[in-house]
Structure formats: structure tokens, C-alpha cells
Image (cartoon, rainbow, N blue to C red; front, side):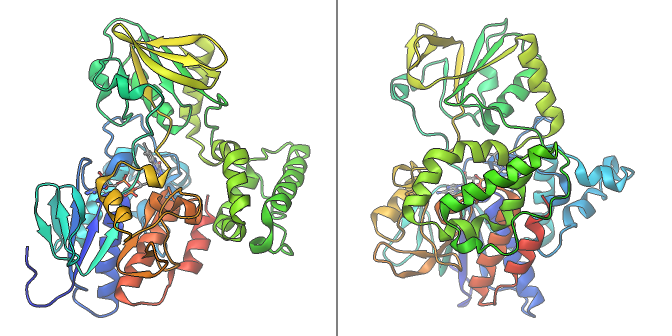
Length: 471
Ligand SMILES: Cc1cc2nc3c(=O)[nH]c(=O)nc-3n(C[C@H](O)[C@H](O)[C@H](O)COP(=O)(O)OP(=O)(O)OC[C@H]3O[C@@H](n4cnc5c(N)ncnc54)[C@H](O)[C@@H]3O)c2cc1C
């Protein structure tokens, strides 16, 4: 895999949204700056279909985007790009503009969009299927099968990890009723006639699993359990509320206590107006990064411990039609959601058993760990990240939620220095930005990473703020 001539080689590790959009931005920004191509670009990707990643690889039409079409452009500087692309498809050609903008479309359509961007921009890019395992002393990337790829810059775009194991789950490895990775192909293991599926967690992954079960016409009972028992809320059309955040408040220096008081106050005002207070969370989003950066470590810890669950349930809302289906399932008894703490999981013959702190247990023909991606960075299973961490090439952020990067996405090493080679983006940066998961954040990050590599000034910041207002 030697590169011709002495063109620098940029190796992107991970081929989901973050990796692909980094490559696309490298190509388009280099072309806009007058160059034919910045360098040789190689994308290394394993396990999930390239371009689609976990989120957009689903084949179920019922798995919908949880962001309206108007806010799903892949480019921070082209807000209507996704809408324009949709118009090239016959099924969306005639849909009235207002309807299309507000629609929550199938995620697989968004996967098609990403694949079409690859087709358009990435003709000259090399794609390697394989698992990156680590770096050699000369900085080459080594794959699990021994292949080596010379690299001048390396972008870590490794995405979401499967959920952390639960107490007892190691003993369930290989058990027919245990599903440790909710994004694996568990449908084939469903009992054919009725039975019980237990979903651990009540967030977006659980919603996906319920939609899958409904789409398959599965007739059994679904039990979902999490500490708070909160299913995601539905998106709604909010009222205009220009009073938040107040113009005279220094958001960067706000701190947790004053932020909570401010939010409380405005939630109260919205309730008095008969409006949904979740509007406040939407209005905070363009400023989350700033406010988070201004928190002390103790404030960040307190937010994660005491407020993150509530924040997430208001922030990660779902399409109203999916929400309505969940409500119907609860009403008919097909779905039961409970608030309880999971103590451990264990085998119970051909079933798996979930013991609850409050007493009692749930038994399932399938028990699916849908507790959300693992977030403890120093405990990640990804061999590449473990190797980089072990060698000191990267280091955990102050909360161990992800890895440390500088403002231009250059990785910070164990000694606090800027890496000469490594950059990162995506969910790996949740400790740095708090919100680092969805397209409205990641598109700006992908562009910023490309700008850093190309040595261009950041054109992202202003556009990003503009775009994030379009929630
Ligand atoms: C089920 C689900 C639904 C979602 N729905 C939405 C939505 O509607 N709207 C929205 O804005 N966001 C949504 N998201 C958020 C989603 O995280 C982002 O939109 C985006 O897809 C993240 O892309 P990524 O490239 O960072 O990560 P991923 O999609 O996880 O891609 C990372 C890729 O890197 C590969 N990889 C990792 N390590 C290595 C290695 N060592 N070597 C080689 N390859 C490696 C992985 O196998 C994977 O293919 C959803 C997320 C999930 C999980």
C-alpha cells in the first residue's frame, strides 16, 4: 500500500457518517481552495456497511430519523443540501416543501444519501475493509490481519461502541436468550409464537427494537426497564420564545447552579403559557458546547450524575408517529415500561433472567442490552483505541467519557502535547463537547477536521451556530 510519489496520505479509521464526511470535506474543500486533491485518502472500516455506519445501515423502513429532514444536511454551509437531494428521488419529488422539511424519514434513505455523497466525491479515495488494531513505531496503521498502511495524518472516526456489559452478562456470552449488542441481527432468534422480550434501557435503541418487533408482526409481550423508566418524548412544534437564553447572560461563565435556576425559571414561564418546557432544551443546544466548556470538572460530574438522564430524555426526542405507536403499545399492554435498577443478569434454562434491585425479576426469551453505547473511555473494547491509549498517543478527557482533543480536533497525548498525527471526531468527543452524537454536531466537526488537515482557517463556527438553531 505504498503511496505514489511523496503525496501525504490521510488515513481515516471508521467509515460511518463522521469518517465519510471527513473524506468528503477534504475533497471538496481542497477543490474549492484550488487544489486537485489534498493527498491520498484511505478510509478503513470494519463491521458496519461503509457510509451507513450503525445508524443508517438499518433495512427497516420503520426506523426513522429522529431529526427533521430540514436539519439533516451533511454540510454546515449548505443547510438545504439533504432536501435538495431528496427531490432527486421520485417518491419525494411531489411532496409539498413544508411537509418534506418537517418529515422524519426512514434512516435507510439517509444511508442512501451518504452513499450518494461517496459516489459523487470519493471516486479517488481508497476504501479498505478491515479492523485497525494499532500504530507501529513509524506511525503506520496496522490492521488485525497484519496489513500495514503508511499514514501521515490519521483521523479517528470510530463512532459508537456497543453497550457496556452488565453484572453477570459475561456468563451469558453465547447464551441463546442473551443479546449483548442491540445492533446485531437478533431478529432471527425471536421465538416464533409469542413469548417475552426484555429490553434493558428505555432510550432510542429500545425504541428501535420495539419498532422492529412491531414491523415483524411479533405477537409476544415486551418489557422495557431502566432506572427512571422514561421513554423518549415526541418532537413537537414549539412556540416562538425569544426570551431564552437571555441576551445579557454570560453563558460561558454561567456555571451549573445558575444554569439550572435559569432553566427552571423559563420552564415555569413556558408552563404558564401552556407550552412544552422542552423548548428550553432546544434553545440551549446551540450554546451547549460553550456552557459545558465553562463548567468546572465538579460541575460536569454533577451534571452527568444528577441531570443527564432528564436532559437526554428531553433532548433526544423521536418522530411523533413512532411515539404514538409506543403509547398505543403501552395502552394495549403489549409493552410494559418500568422504572427499576438492574442488579444482574443470569441464565434461566433457555431464557435469561434480569434481577431487579426493587425485588422481583424479569425473564425473557430474549433479553437485549439496549442501555446505550459504552461511555467509559478507559474501558472501551475497541482494540485500536485501547492500543493508542496504552501507548500514550491519546488520553481520556477529565471525565473519562471520551478522548481529549484540542479546539481544532488534534488529539492530545498522555503528556499533554498535541499529536503530530492523530485527530478525532464524533461520539469519542462527548466529554469535550457533551453533545457529540448527532448529524447537526458531527457535520461541523467533519468540516473542522478537514480544515485542520488542509491548514485552512475555520469557516465552520458561524455556520454551525446558524445551523444548530434549526432544531
Ligand atoms: C441506532 C441509531 C440511530 C441514530 N439516529 C440518528 C438520527 O436519526 N439523526 C442523527 O442526527 N443521528 C442519529 N444517530 C446518531 C449517530 O451516532 C450519528 O448520526 C452518526 O451516524 C455517527 O456516525 P459515526 O461515523 O461517528 O459512527 P458510526 O456510525 O458508529 O461509524 C463508525 C464506523 O467505524 C468503524 N470502526 C470503529 N473502529 C474501527 C477500527 N478500529 N477499524 C475499522 N473500523 C472501525 C465501525 O465499525 C463503524 O463502521 C443515531 C445513532 C444510532 C446508534
